Image (tube, rainbow, N blue to C red):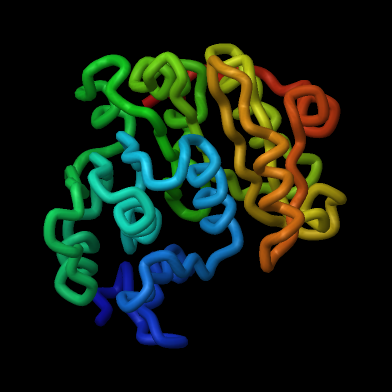
Amino acid sequence: MADGRFELVEQDGGVLVRRDGRDQSFVDPADPTRLAFDYVRRLGDALDVLRPAGVPLRVVHVGGAGLTLPRYVAAMRPGSSQVVLEPDAELTDAVRRVLPLPARSGIRVRPVLGRPGLAELPPGRADVVVVDAFDDGEVPADLVSGPGLVAVATALAEDGLALLNLADAAPFRATRDALAAVRAVLPHVCVSAEPATLRGRRPGNLLVAGSRQPLPVELLRERARTGGSPYRVLDTSEASDTVGGGRVQADPVR
């Protein structure tokens, strides 16, 4: 299925969602716990270690595409309440026709941009806010600005977790600035990425996690060592040494 901006392609036993020429999601309708993209697996690992297995979570997803991660949470933690902020209503409708959500999934999709959608949430509503939204290959600037991270932090419960998926390459200017914005409101952070990306050998996805409470870094490192695609997890000090030194950015002028 395609409409010029996006297409849904059957591939490898599942459906690949491609938007503006970029692969954005992969969904296996027979197995929602199958996370084919490495960075999505890292998001899943972070969610897995946040609470004991099976405990429901309140999750806000900024960016939806194929709804891969919400489906994963619904399968792994039945009873979870999830809100997806996805402004592309036509894409959402196409995805839900080809890949219907299971009954009583607890997943609600709102056709709204990230910042306005976050502003509509009650303070402290979420255990997790996942920022996984891209516009022409980049995270919208108003989601990783200082005010953007204030909006994320406001939506989080006191022990909540923010997860930001960033596409970047050495010298990691975007990640440095985003990390500075996260640390201004959520002082406990960690960063995960493939070793080759951290060494500057190729672009990749860097996952920034932030919380007001200490993070389960050692549990994440165990996941990183034993998973199918090994990755590195940097704690707060290591993240500062590797991708620190950024500046909190203001919202873009419109």
